[in-house]
Image 1: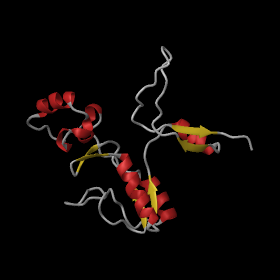
Image 2: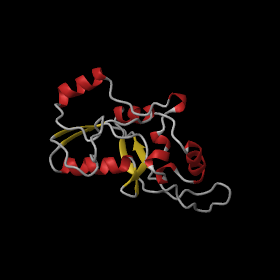
Image 3: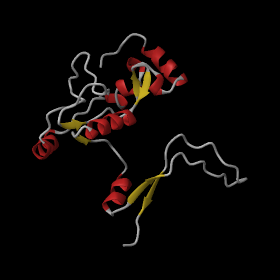
Image 4: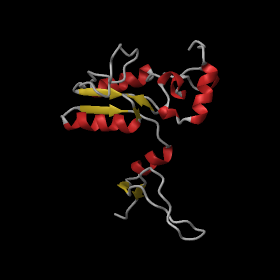
Length: 168
């Protein structure tokens, strides 16, 4: 990415606002990772070939290069979809959009009878629990209790997953 005028302004603005509230040109997810400036990462060809052979994709709602005026969150998807969504939140149609928006869209397309294969980084421990047969429950936004005085907190703003490895 070429250096652009006003880059200093962006860092000052970024210090005051959350990344999800910034315009794409000022959002860290569009400026690259670390010193190399790279920020668009494609599926390795070998992995893509394996997945393509298994799932026979006919649509990519996150294509590269992205055609002008293309919007994978609002367009109709194909019958077999490969989704490698952005790894972060940006402003989309005036609202913060991130992985939850892509998951909602994927579920909506799946409910229409379409296949969705979505990739996204998660911590290894999560995959280990699922492989071991854990069931997952959504506990909602838990209002944890303080150890100091027993007062209830306001919650984290995020849902808490409960993983159960039950006796068979």
